[in-house]
Amino acid sequence: MPIITKLEIQQKDKKRVSIYVDDEFFMGVNEEIIYSLYIQKGQEIDNEKLQKMIAEENYLKAKSKALKLLHFSSRTEKEIRDRLRKNEYEDDTIDRVIVFLKEYEFINDEYLTKNMINNKLNNKKYGSKRIKQDLQRKGVDASIIESSMEDYVDEEIEYENAILLAEKKLKGLKDDDPRKIYEKVGRYLAYRGYNYDIIRKVLNTVLKR
Image (tube, rainbow, N blue to C red; front, side, top):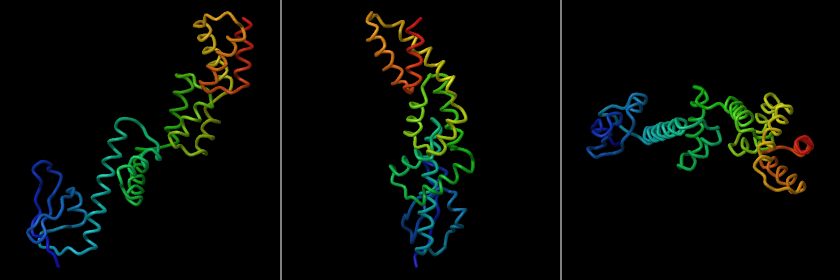
């Protein structure tokens, strides 16, 4: 059976170790794997040990990739899964990464959804339809979206936001045709994610002023 004949710390990355089997380079792994799997010089290496090393190496690489993605911006569970699949990691490895990220609160779809709703409602002045669409595109579970929208989106706030947007849009319009003004402001509010009832109420309000 093949025997590990040398363990050598790599020069370019001190956290990685080169494993030599029968005096030939076999593979490089993170130093954590050496300790977690009790890999030692003179140890026989069977297929089971090999598969464990490969699995652990892939897990650590996938976890590092996920943490780098999260360093730049918050992500949903689905976004992390999609990016790791794109990098050809196996589902078992991805599942382990997701468990780790959730355990240490690196990902939390409920918290992310709350923050997104707050930002899009209060800062960007989006309507509920646009907010839902953006959350769906990020892969947030439908039940989380629905419960969060009920908790944080108020129709009165939407109406007030839509009034502000409509008034701002009106100031930039040079058209004198009331019908065209009505259509342009209505389309603008629809694009921002407001439903028909709010758009109608807002148009009836601002165009009568």
